Length: 142
Image (cartoon, rainbow, N blue to C red; front, top):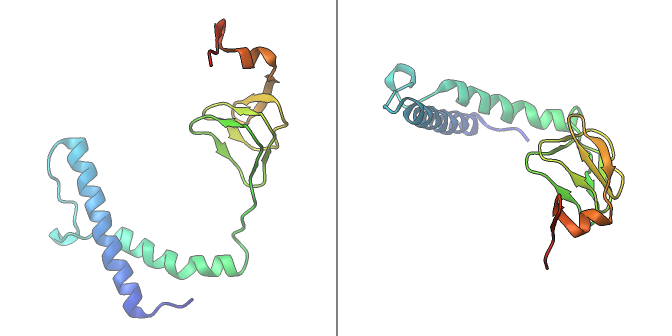
């Protein structure tokens, strides 16, 4: 899809202003004062505007030429995936599997296991004791 100069100019202006707003808000929170980081004292940050224009021009071509591809991620039933875990494209997580927080899953994880780490490795199988106790000897009360 080709954009006209009019569209590209709007992309530039909108993303320049949004980038300026984000930069000023970050500086205000970080330094606890107002800092105008604008270009020529205008509320513009041209770096974000140029980036938006370049992305809008070149990303559709990358998809059409298949330089960018996506693969499905399959997650089984009754899985628990910890906060911040990253599942790379094409991996499969088996049923009843537990993925630790912050783990990076680079390969398939079998069913009924606890997997942790970077790269994610199987630590141990999930057994009946895991269903009875949630932490050491503290029982699950339903």
